[in-house]
Length: 436
Image: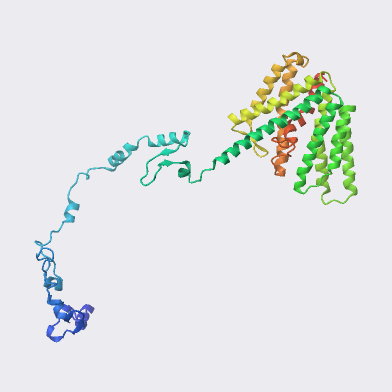
């Protein structure tokens, strides 16, 4: 090796352990507990180290056979072939197997054949309705193996008293709804049969309660309408309808609107324009119901008013049930997400069918079949608009119901929203037909 090789210099400086002369270095002697003396040459030669017993002479400890001699251990030598059985892993890896000719296509076919149709079964199972049922199973160390719903869902079961209270509350709600509906319908039918000022007074009362609900609701939005002016306005509109006619309704509405404008012009309010608009808008909107008084002043008042009421009611019922069963496309998603196109046509079909049937009864023969169908078509278009108007108002105010005067139904406006715009529309239609 060249003298310039750094490896050669390193060997000269440090030397190689196995080439050192034993005579040139003496083993350092030190004492360990239980050992007389310990020398480096004793370890290298495999001689007695502890208590004079052979430890590293290569004798077999378990069977008494030679496994690795002491000089082999000290010098880095390995064990003999006859002593240790070695496994030739390289030979095993290079040996031919039955999988050498197994292609990727065959592997994929073999592994996926078992799961053929699994995706279809999973998709079909996901579309089916499954009913949760408790499962009985035996668990070691557990007295009862009944697995309840809480074990599956991780939620604690509700007590039996809670279910009973829920059922009682639902029953009470239905009872209140039916009771309040019967009371308001009884008042309506009684005043209609009495006619004259009785019916006009009932309509005036309904309008005053409705406009009062409206003003109370908008006050939550920091708007201050002149509730007194609105209440007086709808009362005067009902009075004008009973005394004079349709012209008086418009006249009193215009007079009260002028009074509201003058009031805000002479007073200092924070938002006079908003307050005035809400005051007049609520009065005119709810005051349209006073056209019902004009129906009562015409020929066959009970028959004509009941005809209109039945059309509006069945339009609402038909739209509700058809929309709930088949509704998919939203009619007005921003204003009223619950209304659907299918519900609209369901209400239209129900209204036309009811009008065709009623036209055959003697009480409504004067209306005629064609005029009854025309009225049904008009109601089918106008009544949903009335519902959308109130839905738009409630959505802008952020409320669910306009009031709570009718237990189980909400406010009075929630029940008459379809009638408010339908009554004047049908009145004008009947006037055009010469029925009023």
